[in-house]
Image 1 (cartoon, helix red, strand yellow):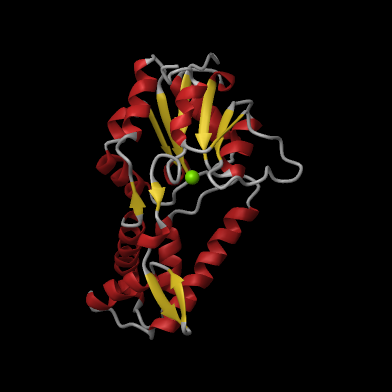
Image 2: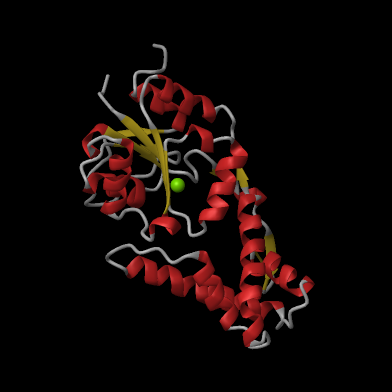
Length: 256
Ligand SMILES: [Mg+2]
């Protein structure tokens, strides 16, 4: 059995799943689009803010999102942009909302967006047993998630019952950096109390969850549900699995 001294999981689509069919759908220019922007729009409207029409609102929404994600993707240090930053920038585009009301408006919009995201997640409580079994075998369990709103992430961890089963919890907004930044993987190993080479990382996104740990010599298990190819020129993961449950087999804990 591979001698790991700890296991670190990604959060979304690893421990907790996004279900696209639960995601709000809005018709934009006659085409259905999955977006939380309508929820934010309605929340702002109900809170009494002076609003532009929804199409203009949605246009700024997409534009600022693209701007922020582009900045993140181009940053060689992988710094995170917090969702409160993103929402302040977005509300700054809405000239109908007076300067002095923008901070409050950003909070209203962000809260509605996060409720939309959280409402699109599903959790299989059987996953708690995976974490319990790993801890029961004496290995600490960590979580390292790319998410731009730490409050919302902690809320999901609490609600699902995952939070009390974690020895280490790292959310990119709180760390200031996103996976695949090597510093995050070194730090999570340090907090677990093991060398990076003795920790197994488990996640579903190749760049973040395979390239990231590989950069610091941390073994990884890639959850590849759709049977995707390893990207050209990339090193394959140490393990490839279809379901997070299979991590127990890698750890020799599947009772076989
Ligand atoms: Mg993920």
